[in-house]
Amino acid sequence: MMNNRKVYSSLFIYFLMSGIIFAQPKLNVQLGGGFFNPKFIGLDPDSNTVLPSGSLLSKNLLLNWGVRYQIYHNMRLGYTQSHSLHFGKIGSSNYTRNIAFRSISFETFYYIRERMELNFTLAPMINKGKISIKDEKPSEDMDTLLNSYNNSSVNLSTGGTMEKTWLGFASHVGLRYYFSSLLSVEGKIGYYNSSYKENNWKLEGEKVTGPKMKIKELPVVQFNLIFGL
Image (tube, rainbow, N blue to C red; front, side, top):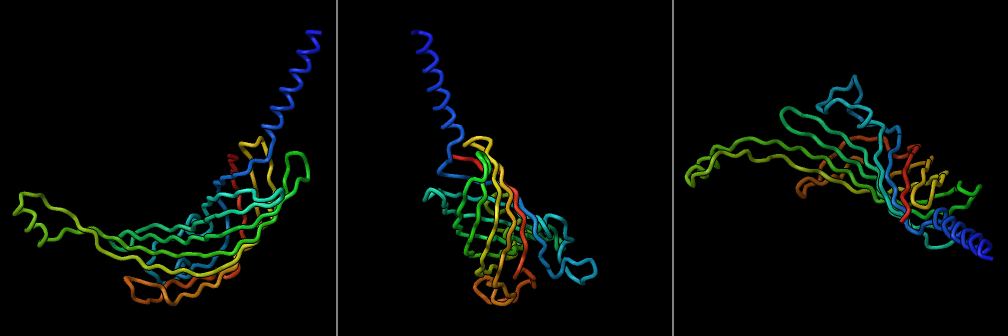
């Protein structure tokens, strides 16, 4: 009788732990990267431009993060960002460009196997571009004033930041594999569709023309680690 109780207890604990390990988490946090192939005018080898030379990071690589919450038994609502970054020097100044593809996603999913999930995502986007130039130089007039207060010389930052926001839309098909409810891996393929035009950037409140970028229709591949909470 005692042995039967131990067996039943062991089975109960096993099934309980199995449910905890493989249960679908309500909240997901994603970290990962992706690849796309935009056309950034000015990063071509033969172009006459002042921009820093491009690399895989500035041309084709995306850095992703996001959160998704299960609002129905086969649907998630989420917020994600994918960033395209470019760093370098223009003369003595530091150049930084960040294109943030920001989306509110609606995702449906179902299991094709016990630990394997197929999902479909539609996501309206509010994207933002940001370009900054920053240089640090000494100011003789400020040094004169500081020295009168017994301070040493300082370098002051000069430059500016130009920004623009535009709308877009994303769609993806993804495949996710669960190691447990706490960790899974996911691959996604899809498209970014964008309404971007180079006019009407803002620099210190003034409208200016920004970079020419062919990013209206972009195929995208993403790979993410998913942490369940």
